[in-house]
Image 1 (tube, helix red, strand yellow):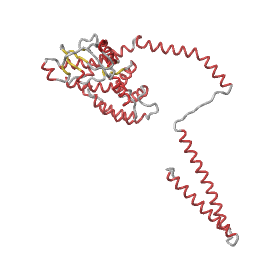
Image 2 (cartoon, helix red, strand yellow):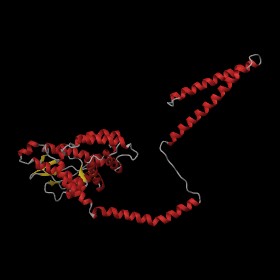
Image 3 (spheres, rainbow, N blue to C red):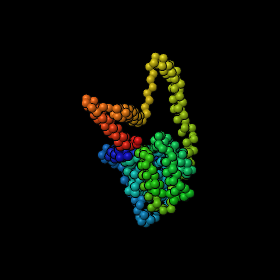
Image 4 (cartoon, rainbow, N blue to C red):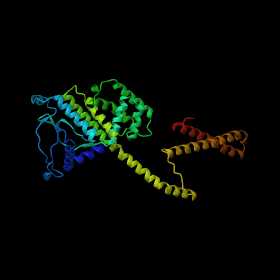
Length: 366
């Protein structure tokens, strides 16, 4: 996350890039009457200097000034909600730093947006995945949620699914039955944070930016109109997005790419199959199997085998010496041999004791 944000910070220092971002937003909202993006003066703009149209307005959180000007706070909250919903669901290109200093109220209750140094990008597949997550959360489908997180690359495919499903179910139960107007984005994120860290979930940087954007816009909206329900405003946009997903213009390119891929596969398959069969006949095909942690497991098995062999040898020597000692002659010269055998017996007993202690210390038990 830190590396991703370092990239964003460096990008913010390039004002030409910020100017291009502003122009793209200006084009996306060209038909919106209640949103205005200032134009960029490219003749005077460089990588270190950004020259844009000056706009005069009130800060979106200056409630006293807004009321003194006679602006309708509910209308302004509605315009801000439409702004964030349109740029996320329709455009997939959103302003990722919408703090009150970057949102101005212009005459006519028009929202003026400035500072496009940090923006987020969501592909159509990302937007569809987010809507699926939302629908599954409403339906309390924790199995589907985990499957979707794995498909998105957020969760590892080898993740322990049951504990994650249990924690997600507990989280959803907290909000189950609540009106959406009572659900706070910041509170949901606070509840999600321990789950993200516990299961090492890897959110893409654009999703982090989106979460930050929603928290900022929620704060702005609640300050303008405490009872404002952004979810009610978003429903028409969600339905429109879902209808658009079924249009041939949306799924047609994906189908065409898949058909092209299958065509390449069918064309190359006979040649590739013939090549593989030839290699099999020549004995040139080998199987390479990689199992995570296999080296550590093999080393452990070798250690166990060595201990078993050593234990058997020690046991055999100790039993042999124990049977031999009573039959020995302590008179000279056999007495010297007797003491050598007795010393060997003591050494074997000491080695056996050392082996037992080492097994206990390694946690293997007896």
